[in-house]
Length: 400
Image (cartoon, rainbow, N blue to C red; front, side, top):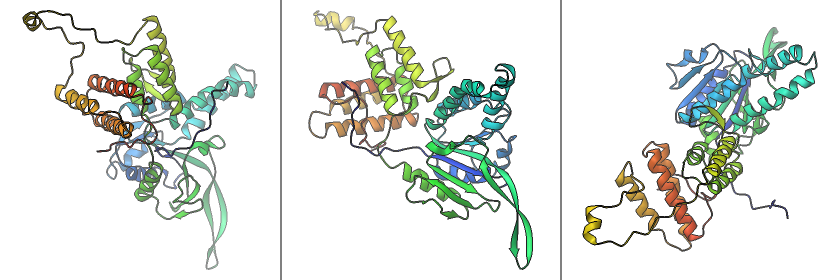
């Protein structure tokens, strides 16, 4: 029997995936920083343009990672570090470096062609395709908004400037990247030398393809992020990573976590593991599952208290299995979870509690130790009420 099944679609909240392309000098860095500011939160820039983004440090608030190599593995690592630092909007300026720059994919293919495959370019590409796909998977699964700039090949044309004057005009043609680079991106903006933009791809219904934007900036970034971000919240790659690293997780728990990560398209997300090494989220969950099997982990049930005289119990109380970092915090959430009984609103109430708990984690208001404990109490309550695991699509993040 097939495990496939069609279901009614549910709109989910998405993080923006934006491409800004244009010839050198068209304002790629400036425009991407303006749009990123409109998307809100901490802005980070992976800068492969000899640190040129730092020229605008007085105009924009952002954190900066200069990079002098186009090796794809370096960008994958940068994505994992940016996620760990909770960077809300990441600008990769420019993505062209990881295609045709020093150490980029084209450079690696050329090296393999000449030194390993005796001029056979197809075999060289065959070996490099997996690295290329890993890079795209890491980009598209980044837990924040993402803007990638692409340089286009410059060309020149003689044009009539009016009043009988002719002039040479520079314009961009095809981006220096693989074909259909933006196939899985939500929005593509093409800049000209006057820094004006034309929308060449859009999944944002409020901004049609062909729309001309004279000064693309903060308002455009805010509109794109707002439209795409409308919907039910999806799990975060770091939250799933933290759950997977919980030593109390059983093999069955990790199987369910792997299913959840797959459903959320996060198996290829680049995260830092317990050794601060870059690892794909799916591979981390599988590794932890194998470890759980070796340790023969089982769900723990609280043992019944032995019968003993009241005075003896008072003199030597049993040591607690869990010691919270913040007793008031844990008690508050335990009370909220325990107060949710059966009924038609139970699932919605649990979703609200989970959304608020995730927000507390994102704001740094809860330790990892307490977060994992409260989250497990939440899932145990779901199980006792016969409700599905994890936050379903109709949950509202951050609900008060």
